[in-house]
Amino acid sequence: MKSAVFLSAALTVTLGSSTHAASPQRRSDKDPLPAAEIRSVRKPVTFKEYTLPNGLRIILHQNHSAPVISTYVLYKVGSKNERPDRTGFAHFFEHLMFEGSEFIPRGTIDKYISGAGGNLNASTSFDRTDYYFNLPAHQLPLALWIESERMLHPRIDEAGVETQRAVVKEERRRSYDNQPYGSLFEELSSLVFEDTPYQWVPIGSFQYIDKATIDEFREFHRTFYRPENATLVVAGDFQEEQTRKLIEDYFSAIPNGKPIPRPAFEWKLDVQGKTKDVVKKNTPLPALVQAWRAPSETDPDAYPLEMLSHILGEGRSSRLYQSLVEKKGVAMSVSPYCYLLEKTGMLAIQVTGQAGASLEELNQVLSEEIDLVVKQGVTEEEFQKARNAMESQFAQSGGTMADRARTLAHYSMFYGDTSLINTELERYLAVKREDLHRVAKKYFTPSGKFLLRYPLPPSK
Image (cartoon, rainbow, N blue to C red; front, side):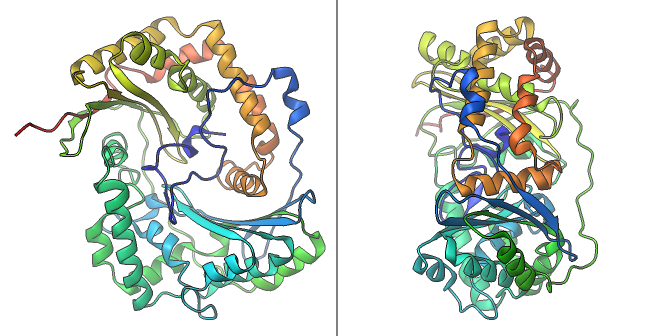
């Protein structure tokens, strides 16, 4: 349920669209379900898990409510696993793995899946790359065959690489370079995550993708797209014995390899903040982001931080929206980011100003609201509303087999506790109102504040 997995389109790169992997989506401001109804709405998700001798982790979730299945493969490789002079490799492979394999003709994976009545997608973030298929239940062998082929016999040749170079570059132009505020998260990451492998975003840079050789791409696949670096989830209407046999047939012969390299760095929370102005010709309204370093997603403070972020800016009834948009009328929108990752984290608040508002005014009114929560904490009403929102989201999550597969894999790989799909709510319910005040004082420090500003372009 962590907020690290929902954000704007700038944060997660996907095949053909923007998505967020591993957990439920951004919360709405709808009235939450009464707390008393939560456990009656949300039935426990049952699953079985085991590991093949080559290290591939398997999670099976049977559900016979509809004749459909979802397969989900999560690789523990993202942009943080790249070299600083070869950024964008993980995202590039998100695309390249759809080229086919030695035994799957080029460009036919989409056709196989759509022809079988299914759909597919993939996404890349700082920490992971994932691929999923949704299909009629009897097409499970097709999905497992394709995923095993991509792991063992990927098609990495000059034709595919050159095709995907053009695709990735166009995606960057469309989603980042040519969009108002499109560079925001890239600029913010370089500020807040400076001196770590998180300081570049998954989309990567033109020059590094252009410079990369085909041998470098092949080596990247050999290093990270291996069974011991992956989790496979099958969720839906299947027979366990038959599915175990299929997985054994398709994946057990895939070899593992030498130890997988992991980036080593120290994540310091007590650093001096910085300010940066980004002047773009296509900036329509003044905007700014205040941000602070935060702990990783598995830190105990993650739970009160997410609830505090919800109180501050989630929805029209939130504290910041009511103050900056409704009452003072200086802002068009307010967006909170509680973006917690495997090794780093970020708390951020983005404010887009009304026409005529100055960046100085936006910064002042936002700072006043942050100072207020640091000094006084949150009200009991705000706390209960956030608590109910966590309960409501938990009750309504995992409605599809694809959602359940993603969540199971994420908890298994990054938390080492797959059962959190059923129990994580208890961690939210254990948070006290004073915990929210404590983390506000701990993380919203004046010295640790990063400020990213988007002024209006100079008039000619």
